[in-house]
Image (tube, rainbow over all chains, first blue to last red; front, side, top):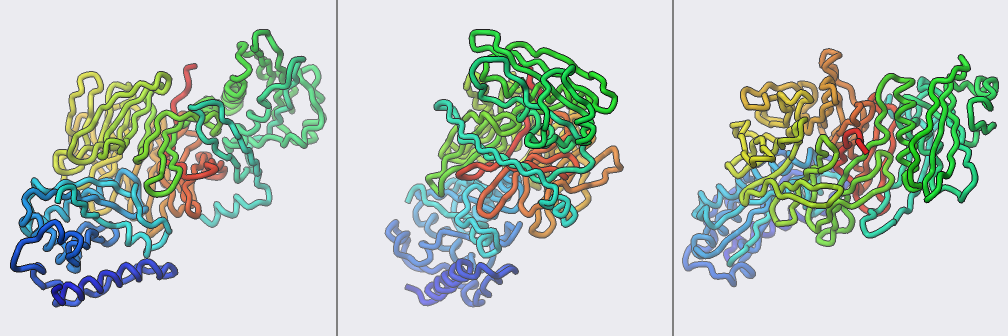
Length: 171
Length: 443
């Protein structure tokens, strides 16, 4: 495994852990400052093509969630690497298909959040295509705030619900 | 908000707690617990004396009690507690007005119920002005099956409400809402229809995937709603009497959401994103022809028709944050109409078009705000937050329903239009959300 990938993975796990435990924090937990080198690193696998087995074993491909800031649809720099490896997988496996499931936190109305979740899914779709994925391999669905992974009313929880789940429907 | 909380202090709060365990068949839904918080010194005092029953078996419904709860919930009346009702006249000639003047009552309702055979009963009632000792109403209602006594009680409450306030009552109406029971993948979603006081809940549709945005047709016979049961969102129209259902919008790509009936019931305004972005369309239900209304890179959703059918209010974030806009129903230029607060969404319009309710967000606090066009677009809050949503007007606009989050669960509130009296509708187990108040009933 590439060392930078491992660093990125550790950094991401830390985000999750912080989000899970610091329930008393009122202000948004600062997203971990991604180490600059990570953000600028090229896709992890530079020689050889991905295979379906890599979906379970490759540290980058195993990352299937892109998180967003409140009311935002821009993809944060720390998720560019995830986008890049999934885009490469799509490129390496033309028969692969993914569904991007857009989600929001509980604030705001249900129908508006359907729109917001779709925008997030579209943002990930565009990024995947910019990085080499094909539009025909990607579908987007929005669940808005219908499928929260966390049900507390605080930023730690909200930050986990503002997400796009990357789901492989064909490997 | 502070002012509201203080006015709702337990000092003179009327707290009723009714647990209705009605499971009358496979279609019976889990009942809502109902309690009323608040009460107004300025509300009109009225006493509803327990109705006398002439023979027969004990009735399942306390008609006077149903009426008392209706009056209290409205915020316009304060009905004397049953325990304070010291005499039991059942007709005008038996009323001792001095007694009720002493108890500071402005109006008194008396009545009786008699069996007419074959399980039918007939309710006769009288309304009297206590100070003038004058009869205002004296009516025998048509005989009904015993099981319909709650409906009769609501109808009498409506007639009395109109006689005293000059405004048509809306107690004999129904509400629709969504319940979510269970956790994660084991959640069951139900679309429920119930009486306006939360009684007689009936399941209209049930799904393992999300249901949302129920909206009554103007004739009260159908409900349009969004279901994710097929995987993606789709819009259905269901007849609530026959249960027959029609799939009206199901584009494979994107959102099929936010149905809103035109006032004549022939069209639905909807929000669709198969064109690449969430836009408003008007769907003609007879021809299935879609007419696109908005062309914009923003999110445009949550349409609701003005009562004259000529324009549509909707939510758009074209200015950055969600705000309420108004556009001609045939398309054209949209005008922004909400300017107070950080963001506003999910508009509801009163029957006369004068009041627009919306969810206003400021920071992390979302409350129901009403913009009053007849008062220079003045905005007032009628809910305390912090996560309130889905405002829906009663057909006479004297009350609204909205959803709130309390702890880890979602509950409904019915609130008087001044925000001072609120009734909470709580599901015993699970969430209740997305209320929609139905039209006046025809039968």
